[in-house]
Image 1 (spheres, rainbow, N blue to C red):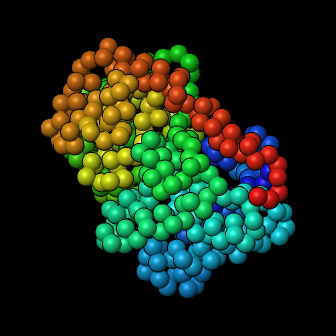
Image 2 (cartoon, rainbow, N blue to C red):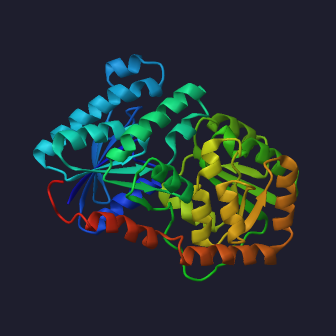
Length: 376
């Protein structure tokens, strides 16, 4: 079966999309990722681990628009026509849309070509953009999602709150495919750091408690904090790290380095602002990376990620403030046996539900039910 995936980033650092695409390819499907290279910084076409990648770029008109949110509609038209061109050369039977910002183009393709549509909702998109857009605008996207999501033949999403969100719309075919990782090993392995080492690898924005954590770490002895990633706060974090002897900023790292670097740590930072609706229900990649390597997590109390940490006793769920954070750091630093117990719990959770082979089987089950049919 030929599958066209639509993606609104350049497909360089998106582990969920990579894992799904590779799993489909290994199962015998052909996958093309049609994605958006907004900065024109990457090859227009390439093959990554047997996944074909085709990147669109901003037109002159799109460059004139002040924000990406205004560029979405012309990008939908652009990607729709490019997809039709791909289909004319080698027809695809499924269009697999990653997040709401690709869904309108996917719906158009389904109606034009009579193919199947998968809506892969990594987020509740309206809640995610509410951090940066006025409430009425975010609600506009929630309303559009309620209209378009039921058009999908199957919805894939990441956690129980998201599944509930789509079932309330009347969507019946909804499957959880979590952002889990393959196990790095079946047995627990202790880190070998001389100094208690904390890591954070991910998006760099104000909701992740990063500048605050750096400040706290700078005032606590025998702690090292390693940060990697990219995003809007990159320069602020880079500059502050330069002034702190126990904070190291690595910038953007390859996806292949994420799990090894996490495994080298004693604990994982995963504090997310609980006032953000998206954070309240979102399952961060950090949780699953920590599970895969058996490392304890510092997470936010009262939101989905914190409740997951609490449920499996795999770290500390704390208030989103400096005082609680300092207390958690000291507790983990001074209690290596407690860290090991929590790390072992994390690994046990990964051996059960929370590993990629389990999620892969769910993904492939959706495609297997459709067989190799060329049409709906």
